[in-house]
Amino acid sequence: MDSKLRLYWVCQFLGWFTYTFIMWLLNELSGMELDFYFTSNLTITFIFGILISHTYREVILQLNWLNLKIVDLIPRVILTSILCGVAYYFLHTFVFEIIIARQKVILTTLEILQNTLNLSVIFILWSLMYFLFHFIQNYRKEEIKNLRWQALSTEVELNKLKSQLNPHFIFNSMNSIRALVDENPERSKDSITQLSNILRSSLLMGRQKVIPLSQEIQLVNDYLSIEQTRFEERLQVKYEIDENAKDHKVPPMLLQTLVENGIKHGISKLPEGGKIEIRASKEGEDLKLTIENTGNFREVKDREPGFGLLNSRQRLFLLYGEKGELHISNSEHGTVIVQVTIPANIKKIKVFKGNIETNNEDI
Image 1: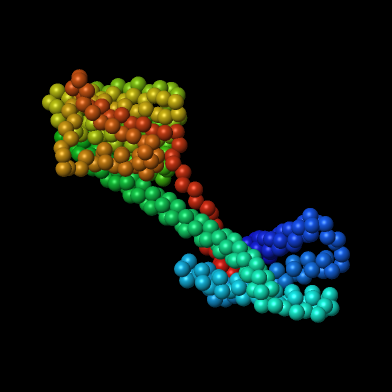
Image 2 (image 1 turned 90 degrees about the vertical axis):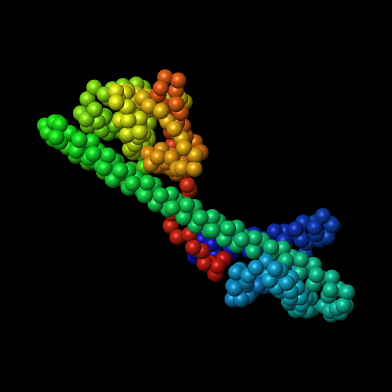
């Protein structure tokens, strides 16, 4: 038996058992004796309650009422609950009063109306619980669909952003090596070998959402080796990496992109060159990255920020939400400072595995 169908029958039995138990309790409190006829009455109440409400359920499923709007559903529920109340009352009266108790039944209009309305309220409450359960189920199903769509769209966006990095990185690196071909052919060969190693590493990293900072530092170090071959004494590099920060997970090529951005838009534009410093430390559970390079940052209004900053900010937001931060500013010492905050864990979107579709006929 399906789990949802099993749940339905459990609720059916528990619900009508509770109803008959309340009748028994009221009988005990009133001091009436529990005899054969009252026990028979409780038994018939329990059985007819299950049979009529189950028939009501079949009507709901056959007429596809679970997909109706609330405005269309309310009059149908009220009318059907009244019909169920009428059917319950006359069946119960016939079986108990006439067949079991063998009493002569004289029904008055007021008695019929009163008992029918009381029973109709019971079936309206039954309807409320039944439709409320399905409303919650459908809401949960839609929520799961939205979460899965959100997770999928985030994954697609991340892959798109990462796919933009490699061509951009290769283009800039090849330009650096091209400048060396005429000046120093031997060094250009070494740089090509280094570039090959970098590309191999970056392709492996591209399959992961996050990698240890130590791996990212190695990629940055290889990249800066190529740039130092090109700039020679015009490019100075300094690292200040906290040992506790090396295992912290970071988005692949995030640091490399920001370092590349600092060289391209800062140091390369200065005849005398400059210095780039890379600092990493832990602040609580967060990683604080600082890239400081010689130069001046000018933010022009009505223009989107450069590729490196835009790409980095988008990736941080997709992975960490508002907790991932990137700030850029000019210092008093003629340098540009980029500060990045990377939380310990990427944001999690809870997605239920398996088939999230539900069949209304299951319960």
